[in-house]
View 1 (cartoon, rainbow over the protein chains, first blue to last red):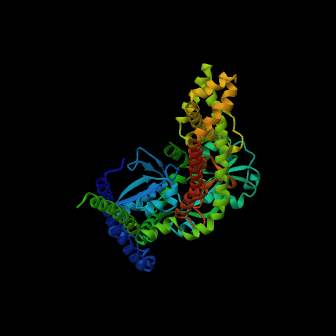
View 2: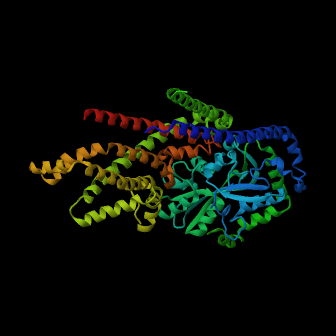
View 3: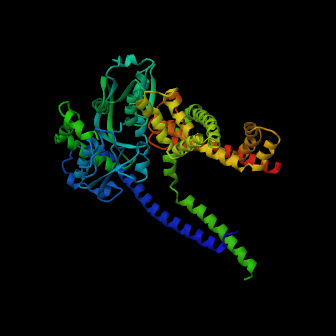
Length: 304
Length: 264
């Protein structure tokens, strides 16, 4: 049976109307973005000089930051990744961790609320979440790389990460040179994987989507070792019968990712990060999560 | 206005609306944003060799292995399900209900990471072998049901005629019923093949070595490194490659169906 032509016409007309309604909305926001980009580009040179005087955070004009939700700093993070981010029912935002504390300091400094969204890392590192207006900031233990920086903006680094090699305690692997012919777990698409590719020649690298699977694979004996960010491996070692046998300085730094061309926000966030370091609060936070003495307390607060 | 004129006008306006929708779509879409997020040219030129020669190759290989394994399993299951001995039927039914009711991702994770912990047994072929075994188990459950439907669709008379000619039951099944049933289930089996092809993307969870990565895993890699890092260009490219495999496949089946209809 044929559909009533008139009915079909009405339906189609409705569709067109709703589409164009969407369209006009899209258009205005697009225009805004373009204007901001131009602005941001213009004061870019001035920003670098201005970043030294960062005390007056209260005067930050949040309207210029182009936040996806007025008055709120929306942060996307791929949880759990302790000690950087983890679920925490006792926390106000529902999350805790080093990254969360950092962005919560930034939000306070900017005088806005903090909202944290648990998101898949794919959307974060591809810039889709940022470009789609899901969030203003990505705080997810993301290393600043040249490749990523081509299509994403990064804040100044806020954490220098070491890589490390984790093996079962009874393993005879003592160094990266012993990995010849062994199966080594790495996290897919991370700098740890890149480092292992370059330095663990002869090893069979097995890429997993996240640390959760890496840890399970170690328990299951599917891999002989894991090359992973140091703090994450420290956490792994605490959870099971594993030992970190080596640490590697790879000159890599975590950064907060921001939509490309939102220079105003990059600048504002950098100012907050500088203030965080200058005020000494950064060291307090760092010690809380990463110092040796704090480690045992921390284990309880970060592991679920 | 006459009735026919009115009909013509309605038809015309429907076409007009269609054109307006297309034009609106083109105008409303943010093409520069689409290009920079999904179609970064350097991304295609930089990644295509790995995506095609490693990704597509492994995706097809895994699909074939899982499909063939699943099909053999399905044959066994369906014979069990149609068997005169009740416990066989129970076993087959329980199996089918169990694996049809679980997400493939969960089965894969259990096979690769759970089973070794629980039973101290690691499926052969490392994590990929475990993942493929899981896909076989799931596909087998689905295909067994498809096969059963096919067998039940073969007219009873075929069976009775063969038996009255003096053929025994297994021989009747193998030479009379099965060939007709398989012909009937070619479209749904292709459907299963396409589903399986897409399900190979789930293997990313079990841990893959560089030369074992399938399309989706590679696409995810290239979101982090290489010329298209920081965009979803590689995902888009993978999507196009998946379509390049599946569309000809479904067309082939459509052609086979047409040919079959003519031959009847």
